[in-house]
Length: 390
Image (cartoon, rainbow, N blue to C red):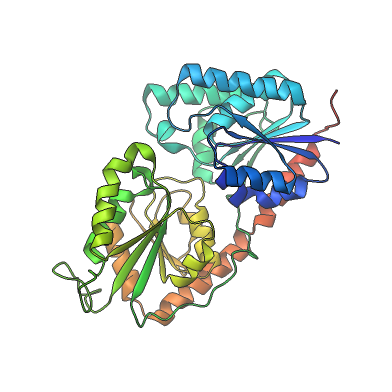
């Protein structure tokens, strides 16, 4: 049986956004999934139950430690040498670079998926130059480089990251329209519930989100509206926020005290990491996503699929997920603009917000069905000649 190897830096993301692709490979291919050695056993067991061969690798998601990264490269190369996969798929920066270098050195066909650029590259400077150099080396022989938004594609190709010239733009990871089905819009008679789904870190817009919660959230003791900082658009409405997502440990000390304070005041519910998001989407009236950069926001796609209007930032990877009828875009890194956009959404009638949610569902049905992504992978896979290796 032919062999496919898939390398990722996060088991939950691989499962949530690429499960259907992997399930389609099983039976036709023997599937090997390489995951960090500190991953949650729950997802490892889930991949094993699907029929995948799960292999742990040493991995540090943050930063570039030359010794550790060299160990990772050696590990990838040894695993590939032992298994001899017919094709390799890589996702996110370190798997793309070190998985790509390993596959290239062994002359194994490989596909690179650039799911986003991240602060390390967008921040510029010597570190970014070093990463771009490694990316050029790692993608030089890639059978195809997939991008999730045109801005990322233009940036990377302008820095010489073109592989063999076969480049393809995907509609992100797509969204499973059956799993994330339309949910009836809830009554807002008892208040407006705003949901944010994100990793708790600066790049996801935590500064702006926490400021908005402090300004717009209704304290638990208030009968209606906000206290001193209520605005005309929100003064007669009860507003409650929910955050779902894990802390990034290096910034937990920065954000946890403020999250605890806002929760104690009754303005916020912190739900932590949530496996099944649709019940939270269904119970919410607005999805707020003030991110600084994305490949293509899965949160915005899932929210729209469930029929919820979105307030997000006007950046590549977010702006594509909404149109004028389904959401509101605002300037990134601006608490004032983010709050103003939320106020504009809150000021709409329930039926107007419901109509925006329905428009969002139509938008993702037309442009972001996950089957479109799977079809693109299949088309590119069919272009290369692979056979069992000995």
